[in-house]
Image (tube, rainbow, N blue to C red; front, side):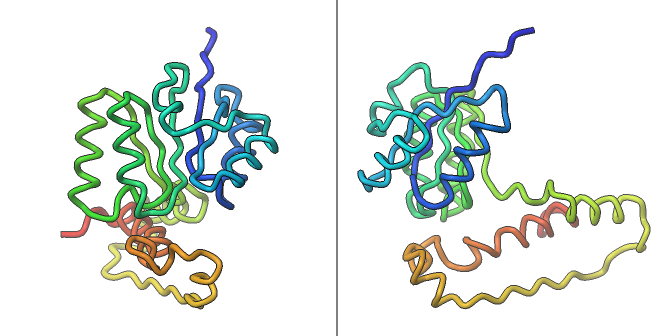
Length: 195
């Protein structure tokens, strides 16, 4: 059975785009990164040249019927608008964390994905990694009884990160959104939703 290629456009050509493009081009036979876009034209052109893909405007990407999947690597505050435009253009979307910075916006994106019959995924997917899956197994097998509490500790030099990544000081870029989401996702995976 022949599987068609999934043609992908990367939106946001910052640091994280390198690992996405490299992985998608080298590790998966069905993925085909064909285009990129960034408001910073020099970043966009550099990534397009480096990976031999097209530099396109977001409008061109949205209107290209051959592009099946948008990978949204923009700053968190831009996720909602970028993802919404893609969904209403019947594009599948995978977004870096977080899906949106407001609950209502995230719920709207989920509704739009259902209405347009497209897939919508979001990082973090780190709960699928070995450490959290081992913890999942331990809980599922009852090896430690019933957990009554969990402790999560996160400490970073926020000033250093904010200097490197200015969006960290903006709405949707703070520590709970940027890094805390990994811990919250792990806890939800292990213990279920908060009530």
